Length: 186
Image (cartoon, rainbow, N blue to C red; front, side):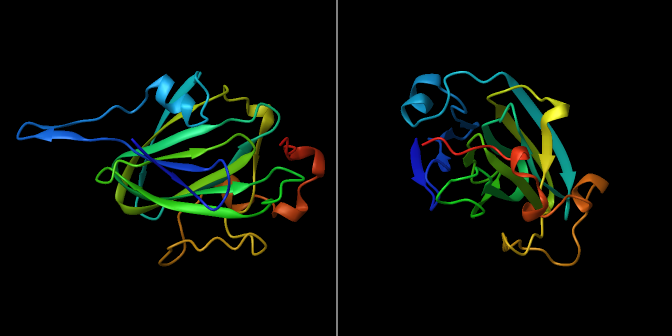
């Protein structure tokens, strides 16, 4: 497995080893020891799947408290996936990094706890899978506007994205009360 560090410490891209022949291919999508050596938790508590059509943008979502680390991947289709540092006091607070994930490149993206997460479906559709380090807690969910000018994510949008009401009405990062944001703990 190849591990690619991004410009934000702790946010990682994984390129699994693919074993293929005339029948198809095989890859390990999770191995507790190997991923723990890279800094990921040895235990995930929830797996999720989401299916979306072209132009759907989901995010930027987070939980506080009960911050979730997410190991995300695309099983079919393609997305532009983004992590935004929302940890108060972090040297990279408000910065983002993004990566193309697809069923073809089979990359995985580690979004650590304390980060906002979102993705835009850039292919015809996407079947999106992710492992979470904590359970979903509806009372702890939060969101930040996908097009917050202070964050300035360079989304590869062509026309307006398809958004849920929650995502369309999400506050700007500067509008969130400090106690709604996770705290950086070096």
